[in-house]
Length: 311
Length: 166
Image (tube, rainbow over all chains, first blue to last red; front, side, top):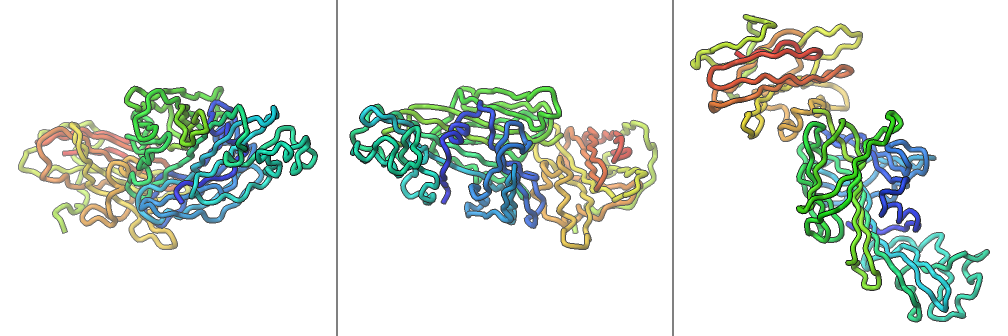
């Protein structure tokens, strides 16, 4: 189960796809470099404006997957969700680089039936993906199902009535829908932790969507050395990808000091680090090549937390 | 055993001064490392590693690493080798400990001499010595030298004293 699809509210989905929005989702590993294979990392997981200061919404550790260096699935231990911050541990018990994070895909948008606006809930499920539970909170009982009678004002499934009607997935769009406007969203959040020498197995591109294909290993970043990160879209170097690089700890400075960078013609981003520390990197791109033909566009994002050590 | 044993301390001939000595090529070069006294309530001997980097580029070569070899308790002394963060990145992270002829126990404050491998090809090098101390600081000292026959010296400020190649 390399690709986990989970339920996300439309708002959260757009926040992931648009790093310019203030609320940022983040994972903060206690370290990215370990000696030996007898250690753990402990990871904080939250959504907040400022990095890495949990003061808004905790992330549920159940959303997180772990990929071991040999391609097997790792597991999270001791998960807990506090008021502002989720935490979990991962036993880094094999040598090499581990990947910890989330990969999500969804299709969301709007359509009309008999002049009434409907929303697709932003929770598409690629066939064969591990099943997300059937959609808690989905007011999807109000299905148009091609029959306007099934969608009277108020909606049978919507107690109290929904301001906008909604279906859970693209498959629920009725045949008589018009003005179908759909966007596919692919987002990845990954942090990398290495035991002993870093390896690149978990960084192998799949050829789908926006991917991080670093030349400088993310666990070998030093503040006085320029880092080079290649970005790919569908396996090819992606020029013009916008990338935000934000150092943690804004509350101890006057300003956020974010760098807004763009990949070059070779798809490579060149980053200079003003100081050592933990950084939040978020890359985003949009194109018109969604995997689902009913969608018109595709939004992609890759986000990571990077540790940059002093020389 | 290889020929690179840790030698007992030799007297310093010109401690402190920046020395550039024309050593005879017949003599094996060595480096003396001074671990300073640090006046703190809680003192732990530092982890220290030394390695050689060719100026022209190429792999770093570790010549010694001192860590808590016999640490008791649940966590092995190797856990904190990554605190020697430059050495770790430059090659420590691929080494197996203990490393025959290279690794040894932490040292008390004092001066120690370690041989520089006799089989270094002629060229320009930088010797790097890094120290990291539990509840203390971390320091990296670089000493440029060349083969054959040109030594050098540099001093740390906090965790390392004078490092001299002769």
